[in-house]
Length: 178
Image 1 (cartoon, rainbow, N blue to C red):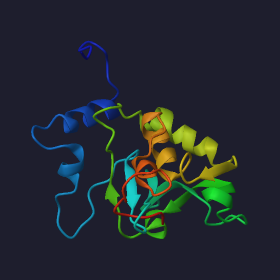
Image 2 (tube, helix red, strand yellow):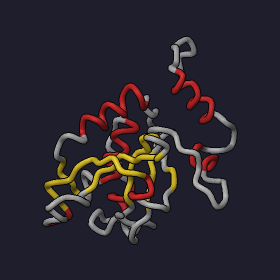
Image 3 (tube, helix red, strand yellow):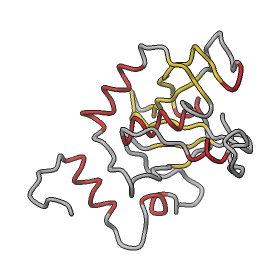
Image 4 (cartoon, rainbow, N blue to C red):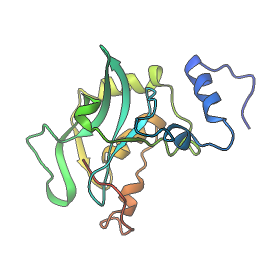
């Protein structure tokens, strides 16, 4: 049970009110607009469709000079492309304009019911800024962009798509790695 006397930051209290709206989950509430993207909040997980097996994921970072940015794990600018068994040694978390990462996306805060989202300005943003300076090993089953996005938002590495990939032994996912 939640402690009603525990103070919440303005970010947490605004988010908590939105999540408690009856009968609509956070995902359903924000994806019901037609012909437009949902309103984004810093810390939202964004899913960019790819092929039949994997999607590409990132975390909405906010705007700089009116341009929306996404932090995402990528090997796009790396000299090393996917190596043996879906691994790349020289991956990195990059901060790119949203439309460079992808024009089609959806908000996928799918673990909000199981794990409370962490505060963006006190926890997620400093972690993103720190990890952008470090090399990361990309692994399609154990450290992909979805793992990185859930680690930022929830502090927990999770990937539904790695369970559903042919290598993971499960059924196909509906999108692919971008």
